[in-house]
Figure (cartoon, helix red, strand yellow):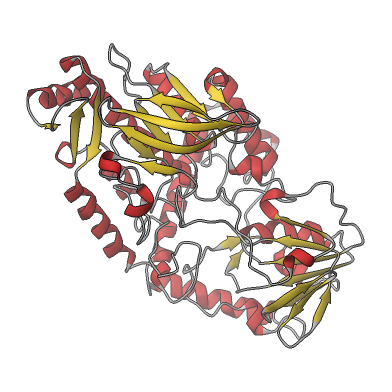
Length: 526
């Protein structure tokens, strides 16, 4: 369970959160609970929920059981089924806004264009543009970027795509006005989103063609609706609900063994998968190359579905593995000149995942640009902060994504770290009567980054495959390379030797009396 620190006080900071997805809401809830009231949430869309507001395609849902894919400090006990779908998850996010009175802190339809650290005042200046309005400025002591890793759709660069005469859209921007019944649908890509929306689309379309870039490991989805008795127990017996949550957590945590590079559990499961697929799925219509992966299990995201393979066997579904040559007004043409007629083109081509925060110009001390710091690939101390950018924090930042457990566990740990950092600066500010900011030491940042990359070489992600976890150079920027328990230990408390406090207007960092006072104050807060 997450502890809440007391941050409020005479020098309590103002905080601006960029993004009102689940990460941003978690930060806002815990700030409210810690006593911070000077808080603003800037959200570019017209509502909360982030990826769960964007991805409204048919079948959209989460691959983590809902009792774990929810906050430990804001539990929802009446989930309708084990793996809730998008409308119910979005409803949960919206209920958190009402439950914790966050609406008055949120500015919707507001885009953050730039963020600049004012060294003299020790504050961040954010250039923001409301939809339909002039650009303005938000001044804040602390900025928390909660923009996520899966929020900017990526499109395949297909020659002639602009000439397509039918309806076309990305799965994350689903066109609900587009009629699919009886039409020829072409789907570009077969990743996590396609796995979910292709089956319901196939039941409507007269013909559906999947242009597959690679194969996936797809396991069964142990989903079901909760029975009346079980649901009553989860809603009304708190120890039962907690035990159920912990059971899910530990069972998922054990899955980390599958992601060890060349590990026996992963090899055994891959062999079992191959045997089952070859005997039950491979056919004349679905040759081995179209359904059996040619890379180690875990190198790419492992998917779950109960209706994917049955859908591939439908007579109106065709899987194409030949590369796309170009697009015409009414067809997709593959290498060799074969035309695949289409009335609707759906891009299931994922997101821009490795260029973190590239859509915002972020400038730290001495004019340092975050984009320049990340030319070789995004990296951050514990995935949360970067030296030279004081009082600037990230949620779901570099190397904090998971392949085996709930990302909200990681987010809660990051929120806890930010609260501890704010408790330190608040205590130091109270002692010195000045505005204080916290920065990570460069040597601590380098040590953490080197350890992360060293551990990464022992994981399945370092195998010979392309994935959304990697940059073009092969650097893995998205995933956490160990148990979530290890991350819990790493974020249990702010390591005082790894950070430095700066007072606004001071000539250098504070390593003296005020620092000691801040450390004492933070201890009292815990």
